[in-house]
Length: 221
Image 1 (cartoon, one colour):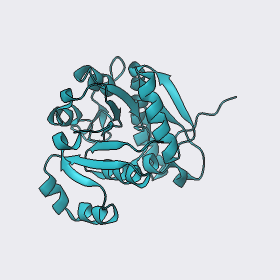
Image 2 (cartoon, rainbow, N blue to C red):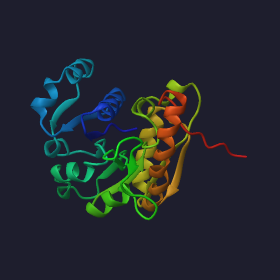
Image 3 (cartoon, one colour):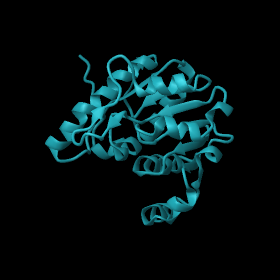
Image 4 (cartoon, rainbow, N blue to C red):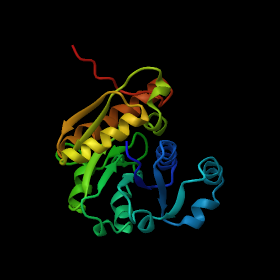
């Protein structure tokens, strides 16, 4: 696919995994964080940065300037605040890939969903930023599988939800380039509710298996 300029918002494990993977595909990647100086001083980030020298680290607002794609890799509990700091209202028609989940850890383990059933975090992001084209995807697996699905040794399934067909096509091309070979388009952004609610089962499955290195597979007749 044509190289993109990608802003990955969130400098934690998810953001670093995706930023590194996108950079490895030849895209120009900027990693957005709240405080670049603090982030780059962290040992884990410094080590990662050494392995990914072409990925710049900047503020959320600076990261999205001139980008073709915004990736929300922030925690679901801070997603709307992070996207507000990025000042996304400057963008018009830009695709936003949302990989976050509405996990609420305030009452201990297992985390609850802060929104479910008749709404989703994906929908909240789209309502908050109506000029963007939001696509929900990759939120049903851990960050290592997001970035490298072949690590599981078998084909697995990833879902996309969004209101704009062209935006979903762009995201699907990116997913395919990462190695995801079974992409299921669930429909409009309201269908993000199902993949987000899967997290309640995902957490319990991870505990039962003793690992988060797994994924779903939709098997057709």
